[in-house]
Amino acid sequence: MHDEVKKYYGEILVTSNDLQTDACSTGSTMPAYLKEAMADIHDEVAAKYYGCGLVAPQQLQGMNILDLGSGSGRDCFLLARLTGESGSVVGVDMTDAQLEVANQHIQWHADRYGYSQSNVTFHKGYIEKLDELGLEDERFDIIVSNCVINLSPDKAAVLQEAWRLLKPGGELYFSDVYSERRVPEALVKDPLLYGECLSGALYWNDFLTLAKESGFSDPRLVEDRPLTIDNPEIEKMLGTHKFYSATYRLFKIEALEGSCEEYGQAVRYRGTVEHHPDNFELDSGHNFEKGKIEPVCGNSYRMLNDSRFSEHFDFYGDWSTHYGVFLGCGTEIPFDQSAQKEDSGSGGSCC
Image 1 (cartoon, one colour):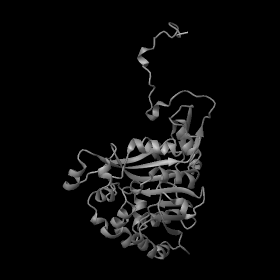
Image 2 (tube, rainbow, N blue to C red):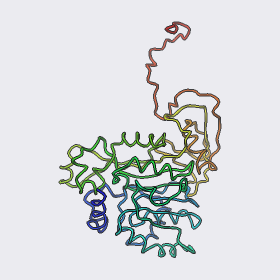
Image 3 (tube, rainbow, N blue to C red):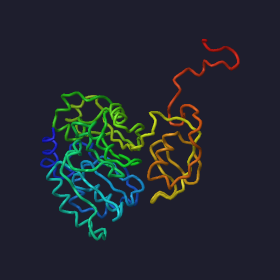
């Protein structure tokens, strides 16, 4: 399948207009600061963009970033501008034609940004075999990927390598395609469906399991959208299968628990993250307004306190008392609460 993907992205697709579906296209509305940065991307690089989301998380100044499946380099160059000259971006891709375009425009972007030298480098390699590239453990603050992990034949290895390469408190922030059920092997083997980022997509629940097994205990969904195939022939091949584009953020924090637990903690956003003066969005369920003290579960507390975001929040509470599951994160007590007697003094244990 590696050879089929290389052929699809190196020979069959000339520009994004050659895609047969909207799976590898970004549906999100870009904030103004990203639109401004996008205006400084070389036209040839932008024309060969095949992502399905935005992979520019908050607070990138000075960060060291790895892009898995960097293609023509669009996201790498975009991130290189947002990190500033003090940061760095490394792109990894397996397709020669894409890497050729990316390498041709390294100096062009450095000149465009006014950098004394480029802070972007590209490597040829497979994202499930990053150990072959000589990248040292805990090198990166952030790892991104844009509609590429679904193309890997060994997604578990990709996640395990991401965990190895991230610094403690770092994050894997990526967009990809997911299915609402497991995709049959016959569809997985179809080169067109695979190249269009559909049949290689993970069933969302299998992804959550893989992420947790790789060390990322509490994957957080940032945004999602259903995909509209808009291609009758491909729709017929897929039958009733449905697909979604989704962005997740996974933190490398070993102390994260498998569920959201309550410790009586709270945080207050200071409004100091660049480009986000009024609110900070951790994920689709947590949008912190500047100056407002908000209760959080232990995992959310750690994601903010043990990461690059810690200086932008005030933290309240400790770990001295556990109050049970944190209901604000959507977790429910499995037992029938209505069966409890109003008079807590009546009845007793089975002992």
